[in-house]
Each structure stands twice: as C-alpha cells, then as structure tokens.
Length: 144
Image (cartoon, rainbow, N blue to C red; front, side):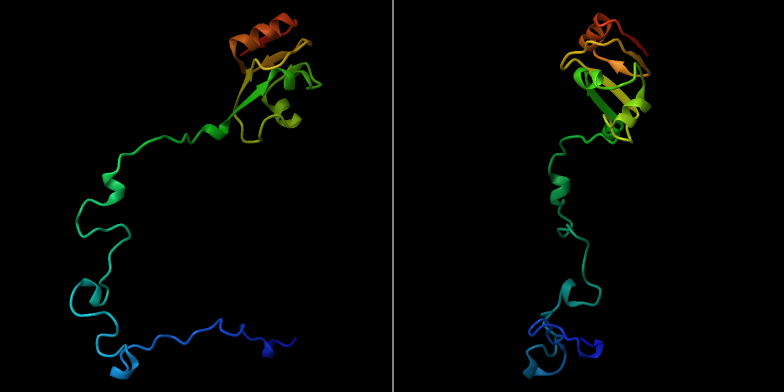
C-alpha cells in the first residue's frame, strides 16, 4: 500500500451542498432556508433547549435526587475481610496496601458482616456498633 493510493470507501464521501447556484439546483435564491424569520438570517440560531422565550423543559420539570461528590472518598470493609489482613495494627494505609479499599478512600468504616476471631486494633477507622462489639469480643479494640 502506498500513501498516494489510499482512498475512502466507495460511497463514503458525498459532494458538498452547493447553495445559491440558481433555480435548477433546488437550492437557489433562499438556499433552502425558506422566507423570513430568525432561521433564515445569518447567525439566526439560538442555544440548545431554547423554546422561543417559553420556559424551557429543563426548567419546567422538578429537580430530583442528589449525587454526593464525596462518595468516592468513603469505603466500607466487612469483618471477615478484616480477619484476612496479616497485620494486627490496622489503619487506612494498611487497608489500601491490602487492596481492601480504593486508593482514593479517606474514610473507612468497618461493618458487622461475617465473623472475626483474631484480636486487631483499629487506628483512625470507624466501626458500626455491631462491628465494634465483635472486635472487642475477639480481644481487639477500636481507637478512633
């Protein structure tokens, strides 16, 4: 293949619409824009969603819902996942290195799902009441 022989596929290219080239072209005189009005004039268009001064749809409809911008900063870890961590002193950095929470996580909370049978100490990590009771029952402690 040579660069000077490359061509678009058959039918892929269309001739440009030549407007204002006489009656026979079908696009003479007004060039397919019709007569008068905003859309017939140069620069005569408006922004997306504009409805001629009527209250636009996106402003007429009620707004619902909320998407937290900080949701990706929070993470949850289950008790049975916590039991698999090799270290006894656990903080956010240890959980990141173990791959239990994403690298962007700032706040981590332990939830009472599963069982834990080894004593662990949590530093800078919150826990639900049930999780805290399970950790303390296993001989560990939660130091926030």
